[in-house]
Image (cartoon, rainbow, N blue to C red; front, top):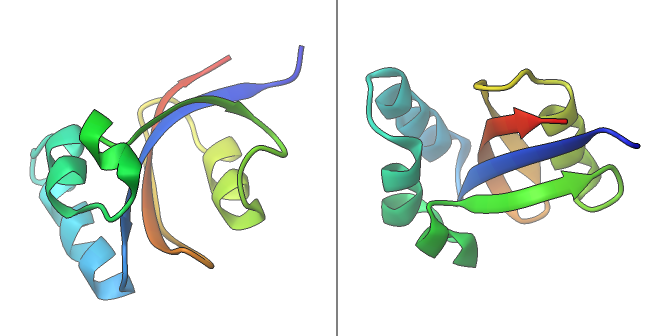
Length: 93
């Protein structure tokens, strides 16, 4: 079976905003709460949850970041054509 990642993300327009939110996460704020407040992706209503995905399901930059991280990590900011992402790796299987 191919490796899969369960992740959540926060999508914003600028790298600066992504870094500010990352600092809030490092300061102890919940990723899901920040996703609901700041993300521009429709997944924000679920705390940014994207569920399980395999290689080939996401855009390359996002996928490379998600598949190179360990469970529990917050990765980013990662730039894609959609904007700047912070990615929380919920689980890996």
